[in-house]
Image (cartoon, rainbow over all chains, first blue to last red; front, side):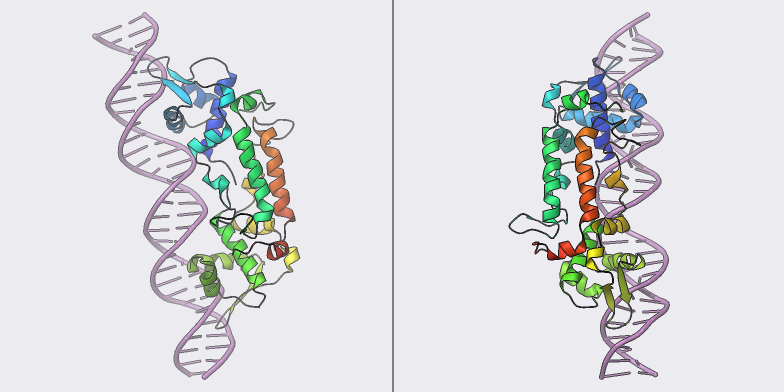
Amino acid sequence: MRLYKSSEYAIRCLVSMARSGGDLHSVKSLSDNLGIPYKFLGRLMSLLGSEGLVESVQGKAGGYRIVRPLEDIRLAEIVDIVEGLESYERCILGFDRCDEKNPCPMHEFWSGHKDGILEMLHSTTLAQLVQSEGKKI
Amino acid sequence: MRLYKSSEYAIRCLVSMARSGGDLHSVKSLSDNLGIPYKFLGRLMSLLGSEGLVESVQGKAGGYRIVRPLEDIRLAEIVDIVEGLESYERCILGFDRCDEKNPCPMHEFWSGHKDGILEMLHSTTLAQLVQSEGKKI
DNA sequence: TCTATATTCCACCCGGAGGTAGTATATTGC
DNA sequence: GCAATATACTACCTCCGGGTGGAATATAGA
């Protein structure tokens, strides 16, 4: 019942990049500032780049930048890229086609929470995270 | 964002045992009826036995039985035994001491869902699952 | 007593998430 | 041109959840 470490890292990085305004952010600086393993983060940022969430610039003084408007980037998209959303959409007991018509024993106790989390992931944008009270990064 | 397979199995087994009334249930019959790997389930039931959720009877015609009242067995206890509750209680971004006073960027969007899930796990009993509409097992 | 059927315990395998190391490649600034 | 610093790519390692196999032990019932 938790995000992958990779999803945590991706969200923290994007919030950090967005908050420190600026332009390019090197993996080295992000790794140092956020305490995320350098090599691991490099591969993760490369993935976010290939999926069009960020843009990379090679060479000295290079790095990554967020290209799209922050109001356009939703948590669900980030999580989907990094770990997929399947586990957030599936039946809590692992059944196929578990719904109101043919529920599992936990359906009535779980489906509300599941729907709420999915709705939160799909509606919350990077802009909201950046503007949130949360100071930790 | 999902239960361990072991937690799924444990919940399904306990509901199945409780619903089929009866007394002793062999691992073999549970494995066959629920489609859970025999050896794997054997070890899981042994764990539930050592934690006092069920009682084992060895020898021919042996098996497991639920000893405590169904109203007394809560989802949180089952999940805690099988996989622990840490991942349900921790900060979604992995920070220590993330709370209202010192929140992470996702705190305001996540904490409500986290509290709701924990409250559901602690309040829902095996008796409620047994009586629920959910026919799947 | 003997056999069938049950739990119990041990060692092992597999795949994926998380993490590390080394090297190739791109590019800025001297 | 060349050194410094960046991303890009490949290969590997470790840990753990899930799963399998086999043998030891317990015991009801013929």
